[in-house]
Length: 171
Image (tube, rainbow, N blue to C red; front, side):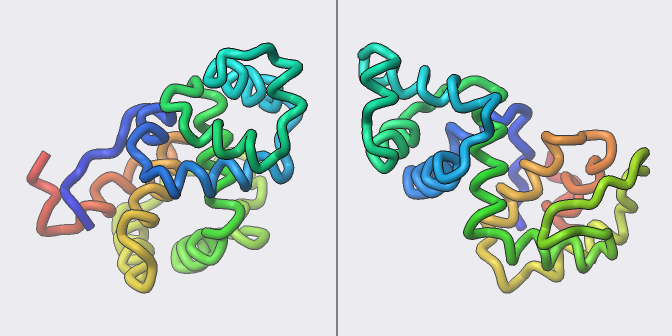
């Protein structure tokens, strides 16, 4: 992996994604938008187009997605939702491989509710990250950063695991 530190917020991680990744995330998000974030997404589209929310709502979904992908600061909650949508769509095999390598119960890449979840062991995290070598390094880094943002205490070991043993002293 690289020596790059995790982005501290979902909005910052979103801003650093490639345009094609942001578009894939926006398309996945709008395919089945979470009700609690849909209004925020339409608001972001309306602000980007400098139009009224009704006009944003009337746009075709693909047009909404293209516009939403250009919004570099969608806000923290919406950025988190977009990142999750990205991973739960076309990147699901990455999630499955990682959680399988960790030995964590999941349903096609979505962790099963385990109540109080202890922090992930550093050695196990490193082994699970190494098991992802078949996937794009950038996709793996984005996924690990997204997972860490959702629960920094549980996933603290991911920052070091993503860098690898030779790079952990680079920060």
